[in-house]
Length: 76
Image 1 (cartoon, rainbow, N blue to C red):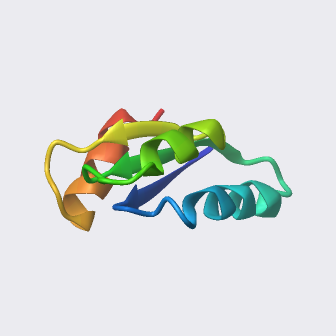
Image 2 (cartoon, rainbow, N blue to C red):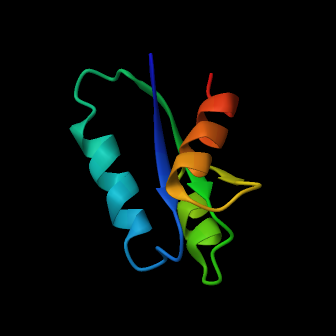
């Protein structure tokens, strides 16, 4: 199974569509989870991503690399 980790920061406008596209392309049903690793967004990214069916975590540190590492640390 595969975990998809998406680092975000203020992606409220696009994150639901991104999650939907990832789910749509999983034709082999290999994705076990979609993790949104957020860098303390100031918009509604966290709520929108959660409502779209992703697991959402807020990274302790900012920056894409730190967010990816944090997401990987909680991935199944």
